[in-house]
Amino acid sequence: MKTLTVALPGREYDILIERGLLSQAGERVRAVLPKARKLAVVTDTNVGPLYYNRVKAGLEAAGFETAVFVIPAGEQSKNPGQLARLWEDFMEFGLTRTDGVVALGGGVVGDLAGFAAAAILRGVAFVQLPTTLLAQVDSSVGGKVAVDLDHGKNLAGAFHQPRLVLMDPDTLDTLPLPVFMAGMAEVVKYGCIWDGDFFDFLAARPSREQLTADIEHILYTCCDIKRQVVMEDELDTGLRMILNFGHTLGHAYELAGRYEQWSHGQAVAAGMCAAARLGVSLGVTPPEVPAQIERACAALGLPTRISCSQEDYAAAIGLDKKGAGADITLILLDKMGRAVPRKMPRQELLNRLEAIP
Ligand code: NAD
Ligand code: GLY
Image (cartoon, rainbow, N blue to C red):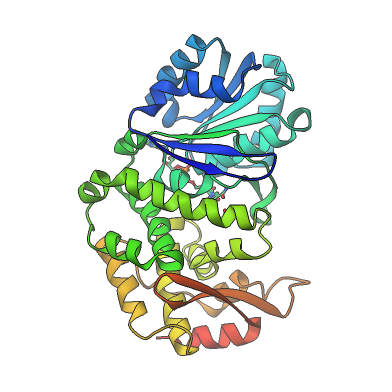
């Protein structure tokens, strides 16, 4: 088994990675929650039928009383109404401050259940059992939990670190291919921002079969990078911003496709390619880098260019918002494997976006 420790003072936790680990959920959760009696397991309509029985059997064998709360699969469930329903359900179940919440699913379940745990009874313990590639390499680690508002994604949330992140790479076998590849966009991002050798390793493995054969190494490498970033900047005021590489422009592309045409991962892929081209035009990024990222994304079936109106670019970079500061911090690469923040006036960014190839 591969183990990483997120060593935050007073909130330290392990990330465990091993094939078949879901079957050990009971004993592993018991080790971090020795006094808990009840566990509220939150999952969704796709993941529950696939994995809940196995998790429940393990948790009950370890002496927990469990109840399952199943939300409809998809981003629409990450809303304040669903959050309030979970809180009422937890109270009906009789959850107390020494009990816990388990998130079994992708980033939607993790963000929603994590936020529910952060505020119920002023905060109870929670455990992440991530089942998508995106959740395993990104959202289950670092403690950002949130719901979406009508005004935008992730606008109401908290930092609430999990007590344990237990990832079973075998769960990725049931992911639809587009969902797997959307997670790969975030995996490629780690290579771009932190580790050029890892980028080359990924670029040499463009098929799902090849990636799956090395999945434990891939999960470990991504979580190790995220762990280091979070340990240095838990509250996202500095270094953690490098995780946004490709995301500002990716947000514009999600908007351009009205959140239907392009998944988040697809939009981030095109966003990384555009940020690399922009970096070249600013004299920050070496000229060969955009083609490297484009080749890696294209080989994974991810888009490298998405057309976007100036209005959508303007909205995504906050030019339409009251009170948006004049400057925006954009994450660029000054070489493959190293991210640098660059502040620039929002209007200048908009003008440059029009001009990038
Ligand atoms: P998701 O949770 O919607 O999962 C994608 C789809 O895969 C869903 O239909 C789900 O039911 C299904 N699924 C999940 N696991 C499965 C499995 N093993 N087999 C078959 N189907 C499975 O989406 P996601 O991509 O995992 O997460 C996206 C969310 O994560 C967004 O809301 C985003 O804002 C959030 N996020 C949070 C952070 C953070 O730091 N908290 C970071 C990145 C993204
Ligand atoms: N996914 C970005 C972050 O955790 O900060």
